Image 1 (cartoon, rainbow, N blue to C red):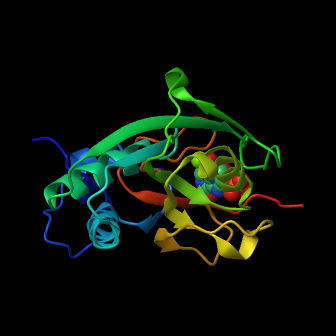
Image 2: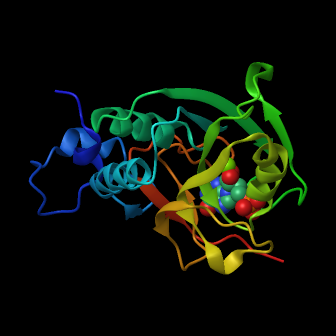
Length: 207
Ligand code: IMP
Ligand code: MG
């Protein structure tokens, strides 16, 4: 039988039966910060928050590659399930981080396939994590003046490390530690994106 995300990341005592053979494959994986079930519940709630503040206008989700791809896929399905229609999906990529150390403070924003997601529409940027805030600031600078309404939904927010005042409108989880978060699309040097839960690694040295 296939292993579901809940089975992999649920704490002991959950409804899911123990499956020692499949769990062994995840031995050595980062400790759980938020289980797959925690994340699932929070994404459903976020979809309701987003839908509640939205009129009838079409909405473009601008998904920031690559870390937000799993979150965005779940969020889109949650929005559709609660009846939100007129959605379009576009993709951005932003060059910032190498490993655990922060990169450029004026990152470059690229539109995947050259498709610009603004142009008079309501845009909801879907991002994995807001950390120092430079990435969000760059996206805001590139997009906001072209959108009718510019909003941001981040799965994770670490406000205590912010260096610029950019703020997301919707946040999945607010972190008050420096732990580096991986899994559910977030990576460290290309690793751990496939984990079905949010895991944590020791905090990187920060200057
Ligand atoms: P900022 O410009 O410092 O806000 O950087 C945000 C970007 O850095 C995010 O979009 C992530 O790609 C990356 N990042 C920051 N913290 C983490 C983390 O804990 N795990 C994975 N990626 C991170
Ligand atoms: Mg990112």
